[in-house]
Image (cartoon, rainbow, N blue to C red):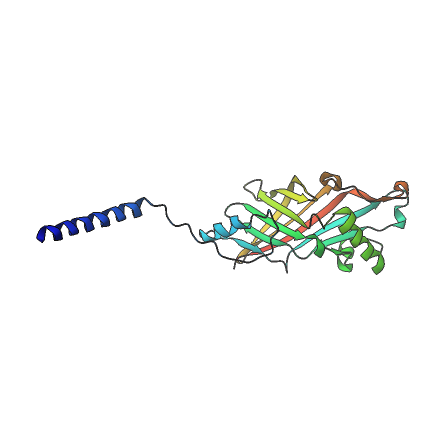
Length: 237
């Protein structure tokens, strides 16, 4: 009987030893990624930021209410005086900033773009004012014929610091199914629990396979070059 008890104790000790060895060799349980529900588009690297946040890194969220992206569209052609310059704006920028990693990702839903808001036209110094009907026609033409928002509903922006001074960004824009990268001067300000980034750049519509609007044999047309400025406010939770 003593022999059986000793044997059982020996087996129990061996089982406990093996269990301890297996636990020591097993990989650590990865941190849980917060189940944050968003409407981020396919291809947007949201998982990277949520995982970084789960690891304890400080991840900032873009404050859409305070952020703004503005694109100025200029007229051209021999009869340009008969047309209008336009301002296209997004008040719905979403995304993340990881200052520790020196990167940021944003997305803009194209269907929510605003066209020719009076205040932004004034800021741009434009000297004409399209009618409400002309503005709506411009917006519909932009979304359907120019941007093809049905098939490409979002613009994606990926940015990294180009230097340690934080004065230049490498900005990759994905639009109309194509991605192009630009070097953009920027100003960064650290604020309470976040940052503010301002910058300006220009790019061509043809960079993204978009043909600028042209009518009357080019007498009235839209310039290929677009001027973009952004004001991004990102804050922690």
